[in-house]
Length: 135
Image (cartoon, rainbow, N blue to C red; front, side):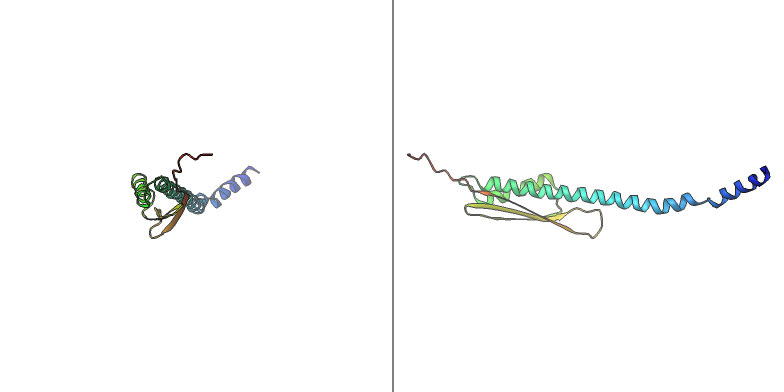
Protein backbone atom coordinates (compact mmCIF):
# COMPACT_ATOMS: atom_id res chain seq x y z
CA UNK A 1 0.00 0.00 0.00
CA UNK A 2 2.82 2.41 0.83
CA UNK A 3 4.49 1.72 -2.49
CA UNK A 4 1.31 2.63 -4.35
CA UNK A 5 0.95 5.85 -2.34
CA UNK A 6 4.62 6.70 -2.93
CA UNK A 7 4.13 6.31 -6.67
CA UNK A 8 0.95 8.43 -6.74
CA UNK A 9 2.23 11.41 -4.72
CA UNK A 10 5.07 12.36 -7.07
CA UNK A 11 2.72 12.00 -10.05
CA UNK A 12 0.27 14.44 -8.55
CA UNK A 13 3.10 16.89 -7.84
CA UNK A 14 4.40 16.64 -11.41
CA UNK A 15 1.00 17.46 -12.88
CA UNK A 16 0.82 20.74 -10.95
CA UNK A 17 4.23 22.00 -11.98
CA UNK A 18 3.96 25.35 -13.74
CA UNK A 19 0.46 26.09 -12.50
CA UNK A 20 1.71 29.11 -10.54
CA UNK A 21 3.12 30.59 -13.76
CA UNK A 22 -0.21 30.16 -15.53
CA UNK A 23 -2.11 31.66 -12.59
CA UNK A 24 0.26 34.64 -12.55
CA UNK A 25 -0.12 35.09 -16.31
CA UNK A 26 -3.87 35.43 -15.82
CA UNK A 27 -3.99 37.39 -12.56
CA UNK A 28 -1.21 39.97 -13.07
CA UNK A 29 -2.73 41.63 -16.18
CA UNK A 30 -6.11 41.87 -14.45
CA UNK A 31 -4.55 43.45 -11.36
CA UNK A 32 -2.57 45.92 -13.50
CA UNK A 33 -5.71 46.84 -15.47
CA UNK A 34 -7.64 47.54 -12.27
CA UNK A 35 -4.71 49.58 -10.93
CA UNK A 36 -4.46 51.72 -14.09
CA UNK A 37 -8.23 52.22 -14.19
CA UNK A 38 -8.18 53.41 -10.57
CA UNK A 39 -5.36 55.87 -11.28
CA UNK A 40 -7.12 57.16 -14.40
CA UNK A 41 -10.41 57.60 -12.50
CA UNK A 42 -8.60 59.56 -9.79
CA UNK A 43 -7.02 61.83 -12.43
CA UNK A 44 -10.46 62.37 -14.01
CA UNK A 45 -12.06 63.35 -10.69
CA UNK A 46 -9.14 65.64 -9.85
CA UNK A 47 -9.29 67.37 -13.26
CA UNK A 48 -13.04 67.92 -12.94
CA UNK A 49 -12.54 69.39 -9.48
CA UNK A 50 -9.80 71.74 -10.72
CA UNK A 51 -11.96 72.92 -13.64
CA UNK A 52 -14.94 73.51 -11.34
CA UNK A 53 -12.91 75.50 -8.82
CA UNK A 54 -11.33 77.58 -11.59
CA UNK A 55 -14.78 78.40 -12.96
CA UNK A 56 -15.99 79.33 -9.49
CA UNK A 57 -12.95 81.56 -8.94
CA UNK A 58 -13.78 83.31 -12.22
CA UNK A 59 -17.40 83.84 -11.23
CA UNK A 60 -16.44 85.15 -7.80
CA UNK A 61 -14.08 87.74 -9.34
CA UNK A 62 -16.38 88.82 -12.20
CA UNK A 63 -19.59 89.18 -10.20
CA UNK A 64 -18.26 91.87 -7.86
CA UNK A 65 -19.81 95.33 -8.23
CA UNK A 66 -17.82 97.23 -10.85
CA UNK A 67 -15.69 94.23 -11.94
CA UNK A 68 -15.26 93.36 -15.59
CA UNK A 69 -15.58 89.97 -17.25
CA UNK A 70 -11.84 90.12 -17.85
CA UNK A 71 -11.26 90.05 -14.09
CA UNK A 72 -13.08 86.72 -13.94
CA UNK A 73 -11.01 85.27 -16.75
CA UNK A 74 -7.79 86.43 -15.09
CA UNK A 75 -8.82 84.88 -11.76
CA UNK A 76 -9.67 81.54 -13.40
CA UNK A 77 -6.42 81.56 -15.40
CA UNK A 78 -4.37 82.32 -12.26
CA UNK A 79 -6.03 79.47 -10.40
CA UNK A 80 -5.30 77.03 -13.22
CA UNK A 81 -1.67 78.13 -13.47
CA UNK A 82 -1.18 77.69 -9.72
CA UNK A 83 -2.94 74.36 -9.31
CA UNK A 84 -2.46 72.63 -12.65
CA UNK A 85 -4.59 69.57 -13.32
CA UNK A 86 -5.42 70.33 -16.97
CA UNK A 87 -2.91 69.95 -19.79
CA UNK A 88 -4.69 72.43 -22.08
CA UNK A 89 -7.64 74.65 -21.24
CA UNK A 90 -9.96 77.35 -22.52
CA UNK A 91 -11.94 79.78 -20.38
CA UNK A 92 -15.24 81.10 -21.67
CA UNK A 93 -17.03 83.86 -19.78
CA UNK A 94 -20.33 85.59 -20.46
CA UNK A 95 -22.49 87.84 -18.45
CA UNK A 96 -24.95 90.57 -17.93
CA UNK A 97 -26.96 90.17 -14.78
CA UNK A 98 -25.87 86.53 -14.55
CA UNK A 99 -22.16 85.70 -14.85
CA UNK A 100 -21.27 82.31 -16.32
CA UNK A 101 -17.74 80.91 -16.57
CA UNK A 102 -17.01 77.67 -18.43
CA UNK A 103 -13.63 75.97 -18.20
CA UNK A 104 -12.91 73.28 -20.76
CA UNK A 105 -9.67 71.39 -21.12
CA UNK A 106 -7.89 68.10 -21.45
CA UNK A 107 -6.91 66.06 -18.44
CA UNK A 108 -3.53 64.35 -18.05
CA UNK A 109 -3.69 60.63 -18.81
CA UNK A 110 -1.44 57.66 -18.27
CA UNK A 111 -2.36 56.19 -21.67
CA UNK A 112 -0.30 57.72 -24.50
CA UNK A 113 -2.47 59.28 -27.19
CA UNK A 114 -5.66 59.24 -25.13
CA UNK A 115 -7.31 62.67 -24.83
CA UNK A 116 -10.13 63.10 -22.33
CA UNK A 117 -11.93 66.45 -22.35
CA UNK A 118 -13.31 68.04 -19.20
CA UNK A 119 -15.87 70.86 -19.10
CA UNK A 120 -17.21 72.53 -15.97
CA UNK A 121 -19.32 75.67 -15.54
CA UNK A 122 -20.21 77.94 -12.68
CA UNK A 123 -22.60 80.88 -12.58
CA UNK A 124 -23.81 83.53 -10.20
CA UNK A 125 -25.68 86.84 -10.19
CA UNK A 126 -23.74 90.06 -10.63
CA UNK A 127 -23.58 92.03 -7.41
CA UNK A 128 -25.18 95.44 -7.70
CA UNK A 129 -25.07 98.11 -5.03
CA UNK A 130 -28.60 99.49 -4.71
CA UNK A 131 -28.10 101.93 -1.87
CA UNK A 132 -30.39 102.59 1.05
CA UNK A 133 -34.03 102.57 0.13
CA UNK A 134 -36.63 104.67 1.90
CA UNK A 135 -39.49 102.57 3.01
